[in-house]
Picture 1 (tube, helix red, strand yellow):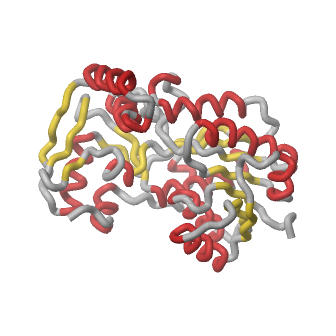
Picture 2: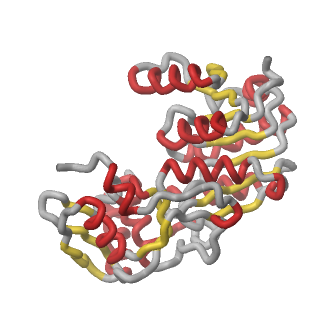
Picture 3: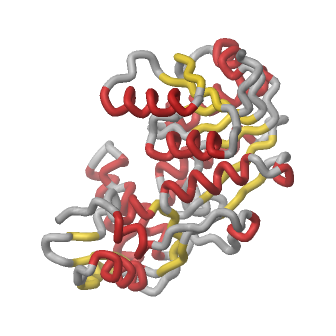
Length: 304
């Protein structure tokens, strides 16, 4: 049975990973997912739903010995990582997973990149992207086709984690140039593009695929959210990109926790244009019809 799965995925209980599994299953691709023992609550319900759709679940961890991971991978030709976390997972864990994929005889590896253009950034620009850049350097010598999928920023992150919108005060606050274009994609569309690229024989040798559901500036993002929600938002400028950089440095000196300022680092990479895609690969997969920001927020469960 272990030799029958086409795809092996780690991170299947996550917001993106679960959608990637579903998108593969929609294409009648057999999937084996690595899951940690003892899943409970929402994770258990998510796993039960994937199992009901035909996904095979095996217990384990990305940090398991490579030979044990290789046995779990079995005959899967494509290994996909959708893990999130710190450097122990993004760097060390994924390097371990890649070694296991090589040992198992897989042909393709899709790391957990899913971000703005990490190839254009420097390691110090964003701590989380710096981890992915360090991981990519480790992957460079692999015999596998390593395929990096980049989607810009998740629309869900822009309306949540980035803390741009204050629904109570009716403001959308930003740093930098409000007319700088940014690449945005929903989690669902990122999953669809990931699967399309992972199944594309033209990308068998790996590379970087860049997708955006929509390209908008902060000003246009505000307007799209207003249209979709019917709620008025005042665009509020907090300072220049240089002032944002200074604020990031101030916070970095004041805390040992990078998650206290990483959202500002993402915003700096976006409003300066440094993480902007030069080209998009959307046209390679016309079957994917991405959701606009306006349509997403119209149906999203946003704060009252």
